[in-house]
Image 1 (cartoon, rainbow, N blue to C red):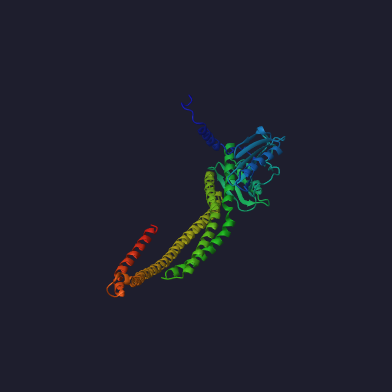
Image 2: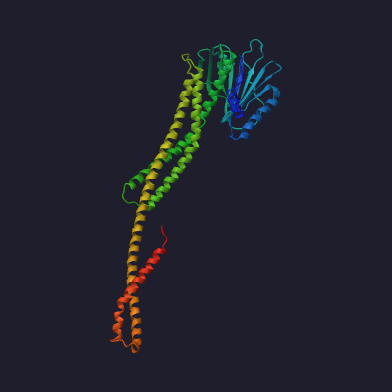
Amino acid sequence: MPPPSAEPAESAVAAIRAVHRELHERVSVSIEVPARIRHSAYLLADEREETREAVRYTFDEVLRELGIPPDAVRWGERAGSAEKRFADGTRLRLIWELHTEFYSYTTIHLPPEHPEAGERFVELFTLPAFPRLGAKLVDVDLLVTEGLDLTREHRAFLLGGAIYGGKVVEGAAAVWTTFQVDDYGQGRYVVAAGTLTPGRVGRLARRLLDVENYYHLVLLPVPEYRRQVALLRDAELRITAHSEEIATELARRETDPEREHGWLVYLTRDLADLIQLTERMRYRFSAANSYFAILEERLHWLREQTGEGYQSLTEFLTNRVAPAVRSYRNFIERADALGAQLTTLGNMLRTRVNLTMERQNLKTIEAMNRRAALQLMLQRTVEGLSVIVLTYYMTGLASYVFKAARPFLLFPGDPELWSALTIPLWLGLAFLFTRRIKRLVKEMEPRT
């Protein structure tokens, strides 16, 4: 096949390769029958890269402890696998996987290729001690056997309690469990491989382990939900009481501004507490919704058949897990509705407070306008008095001038009469003078 006419950019090639690596990241295994599988999953303490790197390092330590050479290990970014053959002919396959919230170790113990006659069960292999980087999420033991029947030995292997399961993969295999755990927190499954090929047995075991992981992840927030839903109920009662009181007071035409401010403080505090409560749980509950979708997909893949006297895994888990998921969704819906109620009530109260402030501002402006009108009246009165005073002083000065100049200028009549005749002149000059001053002051005022 000829090469493409134009080579893609190096970054594009890297992106294409990253996509294909993601397709093959999860380890696919073939499981011969009989086999014994142990799967342990642990919650990640945090999402830092240092913690994820510690998971890889821990698995590498386990491999070195088992004496598995590096060339027998397949490494990926988020998964890895290895195989070891012991002196007695038994084989051990190890798988580690790193997920968003948890990591897991899986061991598949296979008997020799030609087991001794009468040997039915494979011994469970326990990994060497290694540091746990988070709380244990799942510990499960799968016994993979031949045939399709639940024998007496299989019943003895399962823990006490009602048995759930039956034929899966359209009747080609069968799975049973009691959904109970022993004193060490380990659950047990019997997988009757029936007519499945080793590759399909591996895929079936993978789906069962996924079911265990994800229903545990879905139900993990239940204790926290029960604590928080009580707090949400208390918040609903408290906010409902406040809402009724505020709505009643807001229906009145006049309310105390101090009370309105106090209500606004209460609503703001309640809204902040509600947001803190809701956002802390929203992430966990939204993750539970995603895990529940994965759980449903894995259960659908099993394609269980009913009618053998046992309740199916799908029916049992759906009846137990789905109500928890609905409760999570109801919690978020109630919290969102309560938040919307608080926001609406707060907006109404802020509007009322703003209207009250506007009324107060309007009254202040009206008072200022009245004061300005009084000041204007006072200013005009002062201006009139100023004209009179100036006229009075100028007339007095003219009287002194006329009296002093009378012997020299020979004014006919009384000087007081001549002084009185100058009053209109001084009035006009004083008026023009004050008007000029007002114009200069107005020109000096800053323009808006």
